[in-house]
Each structure stands twice: as C-alpha cells, then as structure tokens.
Image 1 (cartoon, rainbow, N blue to C red):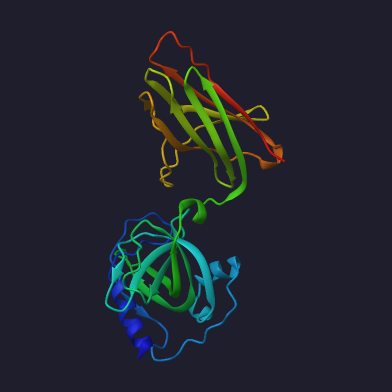
Image 2 (image 1 turned 90 degrees about the vertical axis):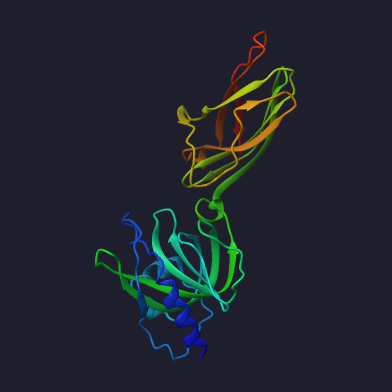
Length: 283
C-alpha cells in the first residue's frame, strides 16, 4: 500500500514540465508511469553509489533499485506537494542542465522551491518513462529521499579547491578596501571584498575593471549570474560599507601567489585614488 501511494504521487509530478536532458529544448508537458512493480518492496542497500555508478544509473535506473544515493541538485520546476509528500524535479548535473531526476520525500512542508540547490540522501526507487511534445522518449530515475537539505551554488557546483584567508586592508584617504579571503575552485576564482567609505565624499568602485594577475597572465572580472553572490555596490556615500564576491576565471593553485587589483575614484577631485593592489601568497 505504501508503494502504491508513492506511485500515485510520482504519477502526479510527471504531469508537470520535464525538460529534455541537456539538449536545451523548451520545457514541455510529459506524462508517464513507473516501469517497475508498484506492489513490490524495494530492497535497500547501505552502500552509496560512487560518482561513476551514479552517472551510469541514469541509463538504466531499474538496475539500481534500492541502491543508496547522495548528490547535489538544482530544482528546475515548481515544487509539487500533497498531504503525504513533496515532489521535486531537479538537475543532478546543474552545470550542464542534465540528469533529470524525480525526488520524493515524505514531508509535505519541507522548505524548498524552484531554483534552490539541494543535497539529497535517499534510495533509487524506480524509473519513469514518457514522451515530450516532440515525441522523444525521456526517462528519469525516481529517488525516494530520506533527507533533503538546502545547499548553495558553491557547495553544489563550485566547491573550493583552496581557501586562502587574507584579511589585508588598504586605505587611501578614507577609501578602504579589505580583501577577506579568496577561494580557488575548478571553474572560477572568488575574491571576498569589503569596501568602506570613511571619507567625506562619495566614492565609486569599479568592479568591472578588477583583475587578477598570476605568473604574467591577466584574468579579467567575470560576473557569475548563476551563483547569485552578494554584489559589491559601485557607489558608496560617506559612512557606508559594502561586501561582495568578485569572480574571475580559475587560476593555478600550485603557483602559490596571485595579485588582485581593484580601481575606484572619489568625488573629491583633490583626492587621487590609485589602483588598490594586493599580493596574496599561500603555502
């Protein structure tokens, strides 16, 4: 009976849009049913799928029924709920908008919504099949989750390979720049910056022209629109401070050093603001 209830809920979620895996086509309505035996119990295993096995599971989810999974994902459709559970569709590969996954948890009030990054722990429950508006057959594994935790872009997509605590401050006539730390990740470099205006005039921060320099190579600022990082404000009144994360292309952690440059100006034309330059070293 419990499995039949799960199947009823999972059939409902397949009435919402399911994007074709990784091909960039528009979302379209899809309807399908579980291909396994809804009346049978799923024998669970305590062994968690390896990353390689997890990817292979998408080609034949039924072969992995009962196997434990732990993975990050991003929700890409509105979350569905009933009195028994919450039903989620998410990309288990949010970088490539791939690995469509159906996730069900027996908690109708869990605080997750579309676009959230989540960490999921559960078991492979079954496979669903359906057709999109173009007639293409799509499959998606169904995961019965026993725990779902809200996560972040950094945890799910861009975990740091190296974190360097900097805490270095430069002050030019009350225009104060503090570099708190930098994080070197596989797909980007993040610089955590605080700017304070301790002068009597308005100041401007030129984040768009900030740069990293490593081993004679220049890396220009690149905004990461997917991450929703806090943004450093460009114009600050006297007495105001702002914090933000500036993103750049990935750099080499084995080089042990990088220079960070940030430019700005003051509305007081008698004050000359030179580029702020921080030389950051690590072991």
